[in-house]
Image (cartoon, rainbow, N blue to C red; front, side, top):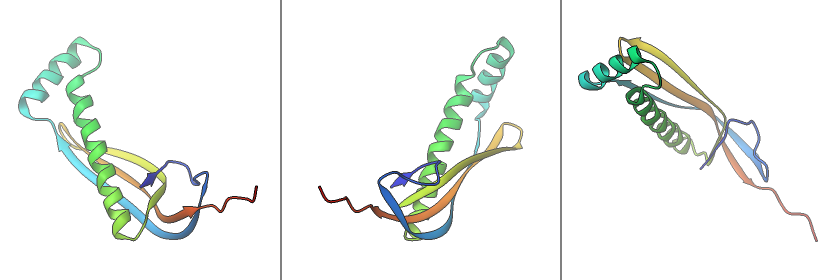
Length: 111
């Protein structure tokens, strides 16, 4: 499946627009990861525990969006965007959304 943040895809044309496709994930840090992250936050620098949890959440949200697009009959998602919000202490929701479409290859010109 083609997934892009742009509104068009070079080499293919949109033949049908199906509507909004979404994927969401809510994640929290476990007690140990949260404590380790808190300590690293005090010392400065990247907090690997947070980075890992958020990267996994983004991938899962993308997978869910693609599943949703397929269920609508799509083979691509355009204009993809991410959003996140803290919903509780040490918990965040990651949402990805875009427009599910059906694309086909553009006909090639005669040589």
